[in-house]
Image 1: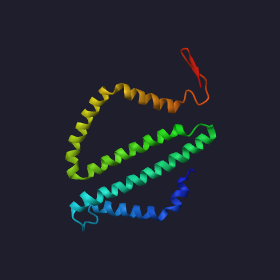
Image 2: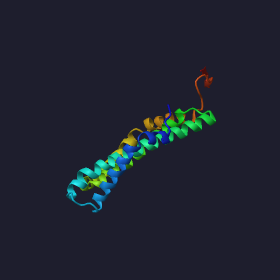
Image 3: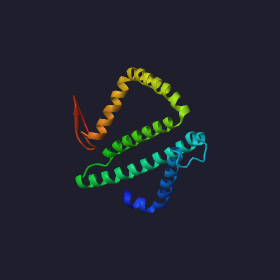
Image 4: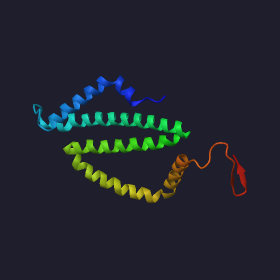
Length: 165
């Protein structure tokens, strides 16, 4: 079942209104408009929790928007919806990664540690990438097969001397 964003927001209007008020309150704390709490509580606890809520809300809105859009497009063009599921998951993973980066950057103590962690992760990724080139090539090939679907169930395929469905 595809949920339309307009219907979803109607049903959850007051929840999102409270979240927006909460985010505004936290941003007010962050920028000293309302500075009755110590800076350490705001920077270490409240701001990261607010960012988590904002990222989760953003992911939900993006997911509903993309699903309803791809549902409409696939109905008009008679295209299989599974092709778009991979695209939606990649977009959501990117949003989570960016949100996670903002959360780490918002906490001063984690900011210094994150530089060395990201540098180490980059070096580790290069090493693992060289070690598993063939595996990643197969994964990318599988993704391309899922996206472009050069053949479907029931098609007759001939590879060399072998023929099958």
